[in-house]
Amino acid sequence: MSQAQHHAQLIDGKAAAAALLETVRQDVAALRASGVIPTLAVVLVGDDPASHVYVRNKVLRASEVGIRSLEHRLPADTGQHALLKLIATLNADAGVNGILVQMPLPAQIDEGAVIDAIDPHKDVDGFHRENVGRLVLGEPALTPCTPSGCLFLLKQTLGDLSGKHAVVIGRSNIVGKPMAALLLHANCSVTVLHSRSVGARELCRQADIVVAAVGRAQMIDASWIKPGATVIDVGINRIQAGDKTRLVGDAEFDSVARVAGAMTPVPGGVGPMTIAFLMKNTVLAAKRQSQHDL
Ligand code: GUN
Image (cartoon, rainbow, N blue to C red):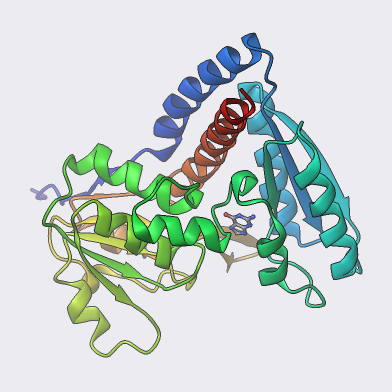
């Protein structure tokens, strides 16, 4: 007789995103009824295939909830000056509520300068230094979409996060750093691990919550996870499986599922939540801008 093996509860990001997008759709309808058409400008430079997929999904999701999107596709050899000019035009356009410049940008363009140029009130990615500063200070801000989505899934799964030990693996400006700030505001004890950490696995094994955002396929296996911990996998890595490519996370799913209490799958975990929060941020920006106009 075989003993039933433990399997972590699956955290369904697709379902959570669908529910969230329904509330966004209602907010958009209310704004439209008051004469405001929430509008997101999406800027894509070059031909990175993954970026094209992400942008297509963002534009599709926007149209589903009634957000107008304006796509600006620029060639790979676009210069920094031309991109900054476009951003200045979008900043000045009162009909544009949110501006998203898809990263990464081609090497000849300074990403920091581009982010600095975006009006912080239209910075729906939450990457501008004013929004980063506000997030760290605990003031109202536009907050990066992926960490916001992770926090939402954690609260949905665990309720109050107070006192929990959260380990964030990865220290990027897009995910790791803002994730740590959000978890701190949720009263977690936060440890951030990175490529120079000593004893990373042992530290991670003390965590109640693990957010994996390293971008290394299947780096985290069961030996990193305390039994019953909640694991949020931010990784989207393409690996070769025979003659096909397959999407995998930063966690080795089958291994982690044997010890974790709950975990997100890849795909269908964090990804849909990122897009849902982009829509939520766009509506928030539109609301704040329309109130500012009164
Ligand atoms: N590239 C990878 N993630 C993101 C994101 O959240 N926003 C933008 N603009 N680019 C990205």
